[in-house]
Image 1 (spheres, one colour):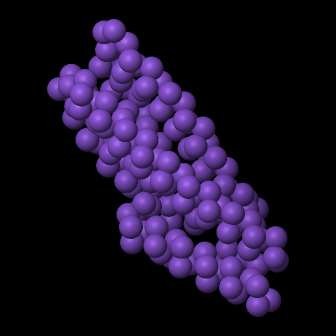
Image 2 (cartoon, helix red, strand yellow):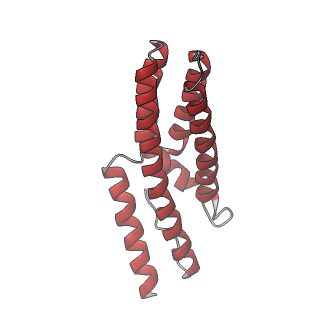
Image 3 (cartoon, one colour):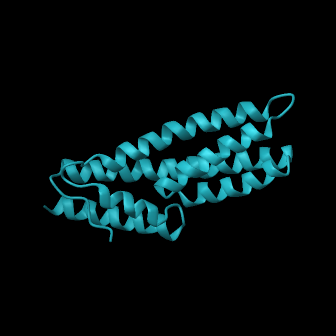
Length: 152
């Protein structure tokens, strides 16, 4: 059981760092609460969908901002979607970067939008990396016969 306790402590330390550094907010806690024995992969599945959506949105945003004539309504729509999906899993820093991005869309500021896209990508890849580590820890805990610690 020693290994499980070690992994659980690692999990708790890692997740509290994610909150401290504002990568995640309370919305992620809400997701964790929905995961139970009947649905042990719930968070992993939701996070995987977030990764898929995010990669598509980043590609769409990149393409939209490279057009000869930028359709700011379309860009804003993609940013709005991205803000919504990052918000729904509690990816706080991605959500905040999207909020700044929306302001530049409203101002039709192409340079601002391009800079924001870089910032959104940066925050997304940081949180993706952190979440992948967290999911790996979860899998190790479960594989070792342990339970995911309760975060509340």
